[in-house]
Length: 432
Image 1 (cartoon, one colour):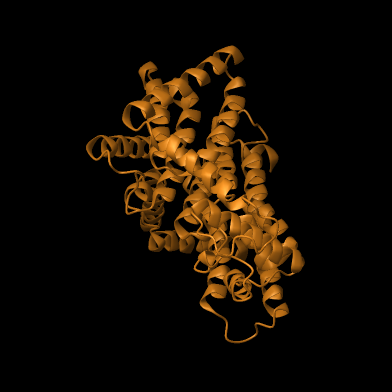
Image 2 (image 1 turned 90 degrees about the vertical axis):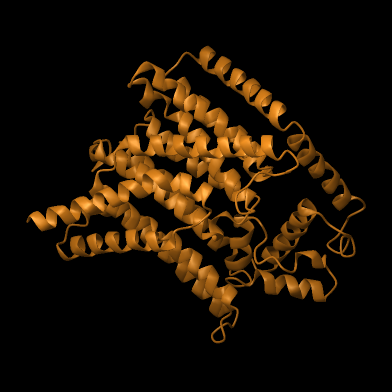
């Protein structure tokens, strides 16, 4: 018995440690830690199997629902593959598409395991603050020491750095209520983490992350208005924006202006005189122009294949056909995905695939959060989960967010930790 208890205790601390350090580690090390994630999957799968053998699956109703919808998405992808006549000689791009779908299913064993560990709320808040402070401090110091660097990042990946920085910042500030219950001066921690972490996201130069900031700000204000005087909330929000602008202006005053000006000039160049799909074939496009070209051809592919798409992972092959026909700019030929998750799925598996994708990846995690919060939307931890889901929904508009391992793992791990913590505090039991 003692050996069993020691084993369970070791797994518990193993999971707690991962949740605590993962937000900072993915920022500073830029590693997905796949082997660690596979270990978590293995532990969760064993628990699920034992509960299934014992006929005790009632506690996993939400996870089973997500699993069923996710498997429906996989089945639709297979149908799309067969509809395209791809029965043999499947390419690496096609296998990769299925691989990412399967990796998102890690959500199920992650959550099953974390519910058994009774995830403490404080681990989530402290982990977010550590990540935000690390990201902000690193970016500010980097800009001061090497001011000639245009975009701050680690291992030349400013997009990941920006995404995880902005999420850490907003999750931290939503933990204000948790720290208010501790020593009074601890309230300074989430506020400092918010401004410092947000500065890190700004200095990364990632416009996709910047796009999420207004949305996440509105969600945070909605959360705060449940607990504070609305006038004080609005005053704090305005003061915060001014303070962030001062920090950015002091350390790196040109990055926002330069990146936004680039959008304007590239959009103007792309649409100058354009009136059909052939208009930009011979022009030299920047990053914004290439995205617009990918979006336009993706919509055209989806329009021609609305029910089954071009086939899982077949976006690049379809693009090459357009290029060979002289219909689009050849600058997009090396991109496997169109830098937009919604268009990626619609292009590869049609409109039905897109609907299942949105339900599985975004709506069901929100539903599970709501259930495990006891249908009480006033819980700060619930809003931390909403921040992550909403952030990813915005990120998916301008990048292949759900087709990168580290981003999938972060999303599943942190949401499952939040759900498990809500349940361990007794909120979810009200609806079971």
